[in-house]
Length: 242
Image 1: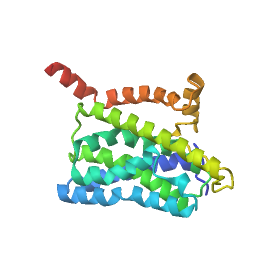
Image 2: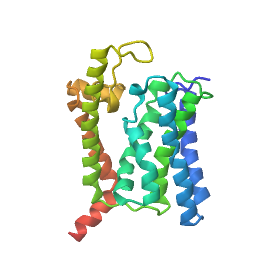
Image 3: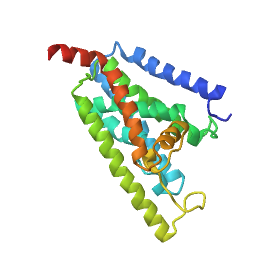
Image 4: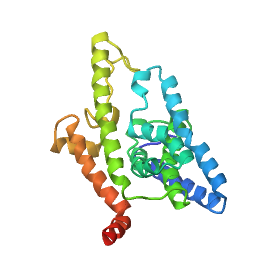
């Protein structure tokens, strides 16, 4: 059974994803903090398992480095759960949105069977990358802090900028050394989509601002609006205190 994009199977999978997150909440809400943290911590390693799978399965590691936002989420998630770090947990309120975006716009794996390892190592880690940050806050294991908005934006934009230059370096290296990708084409990476858009929303941004790297700054405007929504009550409370 093919997963598809906005197919019945795809839509059902999104509903199931919400059910998995809700199920974890109800299973953990009456447990002690140690049990909650250990459970979420162990589940958080699913993203690292997916990174290892992709590096090994496709025989083209330069194409599957952990440099997309979801992979960065996977790298940070265990540390955020086990250390209780406020900056990291607040950062993941944004980065988990990237995982939700990847599940909805699943074009890169839409042709995969729902009974394949490709689907399993894409779907379940992304569900948990969405759910665990939400559960950390809903279970009281982390606290929102509007002061972390600045660090969230700074870390995100800095990561994007560094990764853009990594894209350029890898593509230049591949061109000079005639390195081929897993489809026997000249290798070209596009981590965090800094060079060209790869889905309809980013294509719209590129149509407005047709310049590699810079066009993604339109998404940062949406990110800022998203963060305003996430911290809206905290912003109002902070303004009243001021």
